[in-house]
Length: 168
Image: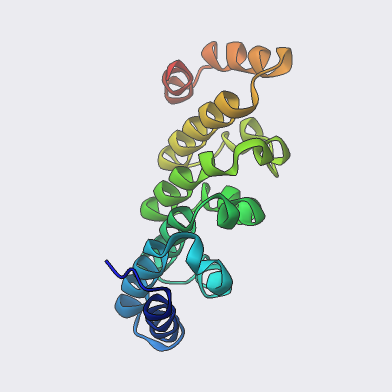
């Protein structure tokens, strides 16, 4: 591990150059390395956010992982992008966004859409991710009577995947 701040700053600069100019594999590896710098990487957060919606799902997933490993100060201002990634067709992107979600803390009260309206018609993988996200949000911000009513309704659904997902 690099313990000298000046050396870490040089490494961060090299890593951000690789994120900006490298091949997709190099970008993904560089995003991983930048995330390891934790909050020291916050001044370079724009390099991460530019890759969150990358056409290459490996690069995008690496960007979400970097966001998460940098910490809550990186996740909170990007909650909307994290929320949208929960509906991605790419499983690794959904997984990394889901892992970043708890770091949003109380900001989850401003989650940008109602999960229950996104579940119908979603693919099984997206639906499972959204149900897990609902549990994270409920755990962080609590539930109200409306949330409970919709949960009960889902348990009575004709869709077996939705019923079983609500049990977890």
